[in-house]
Amino acid sequence: MKKRSFWLITVLMTVALLGVFVMQLYYIRESYKLKSQLFDEQVNQTLTSVVNKVQRRNVADHLNRKDAENKLRQLQDSRQRALDIKDLRQQFAREAELRRAERENEIENYLNQQDSIIRVSYRAPNVISEREFTSLTTKNGDRLDMQMDAFIDSRSLVLKGYSMRTKPFAPPPKAFEFRTLQNLPDSLRYLVFDPMDGKPLTVSVAKISDDLEKKYKREDDIARKKLALKIAALGKDTFSYTRLSMVEDVSKELQETHIPIYKRINFDSLGQLLKAELLAHNITLEPSYRVSLAKKDSTIYITTANVEGEFLPENTYKTPLFGNDIFRDPGMLFVSFPNKNSAIIANLSVTLASSIGLLLVLVFIFSYTLYAILKQKKISEMKTDFINNMTHEFKTPVATIMIASEALKDPEVTEDKNRLKRLANIIYDENVRLGSHIERVLSIARLEKGELKMENTEVDMNDLIVIVLDSMSLQLQKKNAIVQVNTNAEHAVVFGDELHLSNVIYNLIDNANKYSSETPEIIINTRNTNKNLIIEITDKGIGMTKEQSKRIFDQFYRVPTGNLHDVKGFGLGLNYVQDIIKQANGSIKVNSEKDKGTTFEISLPLAVG
Image (cartoon, rainbow, N blue to C red; front, side):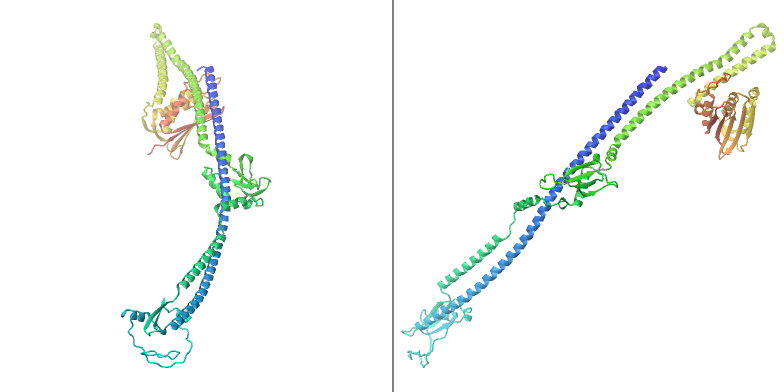
């Protein structure tokens, strides 16, 4: 990819990412405003509902109080009316008793008068019982069969057929008295004698005459009517209070101007009502609220939800408590939510999380895309270097073999056996070198595909290091390398492929030998830690920077060598080393400083004996 195209893609992706970021910020801002407006509407609806209920409760309290007062007054009036009625009835009973006594006297006089008339009109009248009267009147019709003695009246007249005796005259006593009237029957029966012929007769006298009975009945009716009228008059005087009258009285009471606002509000009930209404409108924040006068800056009651107790304008809502009250101070209810912003942001948590997550994904994709492009660009450059190096490495042995082959065509060379043998050795060595390069490239390819088969056996790394050093003796002697070997590990047997492990040691020692600007100094140590074998290969060569140390195991990467042009390679060696160590369940790390040297540390698990 051309550099210009890369920068164009980078700029376009950056602009797109910034555009998405700005749109997300705008969306979050609009969501916050919408949530804030919705919160304001809910709070205002809550305050309206609270104020309406406070006003209704205020009126209801007045009505209930007035109703209780009226009921008490009605109860008192009812009790008084009952007492008055009782008094009237008692008075009526006393008057009835007086009338009864008067009537008994009248009846007594009437009966005595009738008795006197009978005694004057007939001879020897005698009061008989009802049974005697019945027995006399049922025999022989009107004829009475009686045996009687003679009587002498006041004039000393002797009745015929009767025995006679003399008796002095005296006024007749009363035949009836008050105490005996109650035991008398409705009609009084007399046995009398006809003054003309002296025949016995029966006479009946009503206990009460029709005139008296009508008079008494009329008097009783008048007395009862008077009692009923008096009771009815008491009923009219009883306290009567209609619902309309009570509402009118409450309305007048609510219009009184001298009642202060703190007497019209129950503050505990107000707080409970406010919290209940907030919960009903899905607001769970703890509010701070206060009640103040509308016409004066005077706080009557306050409750705060935090220590500061501040009523910030942006978090405070207010409304008149008695908005329709034109006669008194309506009062103001202030409600503040100190944690309003945090609550709104908490409600936007899902939106914020999704937006941030989307931005992070886009940033990751953008970064990864740039990283992949840069990596592909670097890999492309490294592959180009690899191809150049490989071409150079292949070209040299091919050219050498070609020259040797052309020399073999010369008859003089073929006749000289020493020269012929020398040319054959050159062709063999260069062919081996070419095959080694090819095998190295093929091994890396098989490692990438996972097709490289490891023949794992128990390998003594102390011995393997000595063997590798022995095979490299000519290379090391060529640069007069100083090698110090400290195989201090008592247990050095690991489980792995001996050939590939030897290649690992070879590559690391070869790098230490090649990347030394002066006489190479190489130190090889082995030691045991827990159940692992540690192999350290240290040199005092050109070293690497931290950035180079991070990339040294990348495929095709080669550390820039400055003015050292004699260092050959494909950039595959350390990548191969890392893959082989991983195949053996080990690890490798590097510690290097520029111009001071490099240390490679290999950790391999010990073989279980």
